[in-house]
Amino acid sequence: MKINIPESDQERIVIVGGGFAGLMLARKLAKSDYQIVLIDKNNYHQFQPLFYQVAMAGLEPSSIVFPLRKFFHGRRNVFIRVTEVLKVRHDQRQLDTSLGHVNYDHLILATGADTNFFGNEELRKHSIPMKSVSEALFLRNRILADYEKALSITDYETRQQLIDIVIVGGGPTGVEIAGSLAEMKKYIIPKDYPELDAGEIDIYLVQGGDQLLKGMSEASSEKSLDFLRKLGVKVILNDRVVKLDGERVYLTQGDPIPAQKVIWAAGIRGNVPEGMPKETLAPGNRLIVDEQLRVKGMDGVYAIGDLACMQTKELPYGHPQVAQVAMQQARFLAKAIGRKKSAKKGFRYKDLGSMATVGRHRAVVDLPNWKFQGAFAWFVWLFVHLFQLLGAKNKLFVFINWVWNYLTYDQSLRLIIRPYQKQV
Image (cartoon, rainbow, N blue to C red):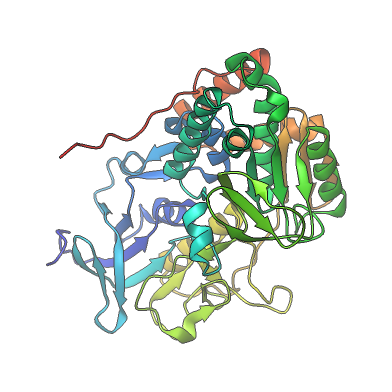
């Protein structure tokens, strides 16, 4: 069955993925002389850097998502289809989706990355990922529901399993979640759950390497570690999780940690659609691309964002999988495709810096020529992320939430909202 998309004399560009890369590319090409088809399994764009604030009940999900269709009002050459891509059939210039097939002249894969459990089914089953707004909501529900249960349980070990949390992975996501949980323990739990001894809550951050925030400066790594330890987070370096059973977390060293909640932020892998040749795959399940972002050996097929791996002498494993790379690649490709010819110079990433927040007045920022930490870094982090949010309404709501939280040390979003399931 063929998906209903009007036939046109224009060449058709199919973009798979409405994340930072895919959405930016579609917006840049919206005025071009092409028919643009944007495919995503959701009808909205998600602002991933703030997932952890949804999970910690600091922001509503609606504040960090934006409807895809709203970007393209009045663009008659742009078509959005909400479906899941099942397979690429490049010999037929066709995509198989859950709604039917789509033909293409040019295909851009911007499907991003998902949580990497390294092939361990036990880790996947017993841990909580956070790569989508729905997963962030699930984590929020789980944390709050477990605190409610803990109030009624007298057995100490069982209660510890409910209130203790282990975070695996010391990158920006792991560090930001750990800091946010520590602040919740300090400011929120004593008010919301006075019957619960907040001192019994242990927050663990497990990192396989010898430093946090690998890829940032040594000063930022050391300062983030200092911030977390001062907040009461138990940071475990040079160790890794080897087993989960739903009640305890087993590391390579030491005694098991009693915890039912394990947040997995230890790695990502590319979402490569079925049908891509094996020779196009790079480590991390990414697609090998050249300087024009064309997938190796596949004419008319491109990859951008977290999925793309452009290997160079300076970057043998490709560019970092961050939003800035995705957006710069989208701008580059939009210019090249818009001109209907390859760019004279290949894609070059301009590193604008990196940052992470650990909590109120605690953040680290690495700019190309300046590195700083502390309160000023925290305000810079807030400004940059507020500026990057899509939609004036979202910016306003997030700003109001942040100001209110700053003044009151409180939020009104600690609600357990479970999805409805019809009883048969």
